[in-house]
Length: 330
Image (tube, rainbow, N blue to C red):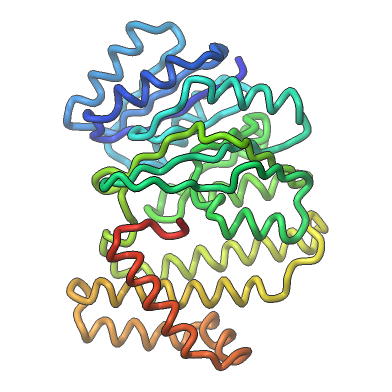
């Protein structure tokens, strides 16, 4: 079996049929569909069960609500295909999505990671194109890896295929103790086990991502620990990149990249908390911003540039993005 298509789902009764129908309508048929219902209470699970009764290549697993990471890990454990790919339950695929990826694999069989451009539909109907069209990444060195990271490639597990032999060998899984940034950690763990970095971007928008309800924008959801989580994720990215430099998986890395990451991290977090001043409260906001200015990332940036004005301007930019409901990294 070539593909294991894994769909974690929780309370998506309105969208799950569109998602599953798009998968079952694929022109390439050598795949299994694994649906993991994460304790839905709106009838989503029953809808999924109907697909299992109708199609021989559909399996549905039900569990108590334990989060998307646990659901995806269950899917990986049950997967029997050579490659796994994840589809969010409110997204959908164009009919030749799997076929196009298979053809790319046959043509560029030594590539380790394939993904396509894709469209994003927001609640107000605005469309965003996630990746540049017509870009084929070969063996990634310095700027190539930076480009992929900066475009948010590592922040999501959807619209990619993963080699299950590698996943099984190294027991790569999603962290189940966090609820933000788990996709990034999984992807960095996966990349770390590759002998070399080779990526392919298809010049077609074949994966359709819908921002609905709670998925519209991370920045609309308030959480006090946002700064600490983002700091942890930034340091994870730096750790792996430094490791890959030492192992010579990547060559010369632009010296200012970490500097740019520090800048975006600080300004983005400041923008987040200022946009949520009502939830945070003025006293907490002041305390959080003071902690930010004491962070290693802030001190490194200011020591190098002394450009506090630039951080302020970028912070305002992030606030405007969040007020418009646009997701980070788009």
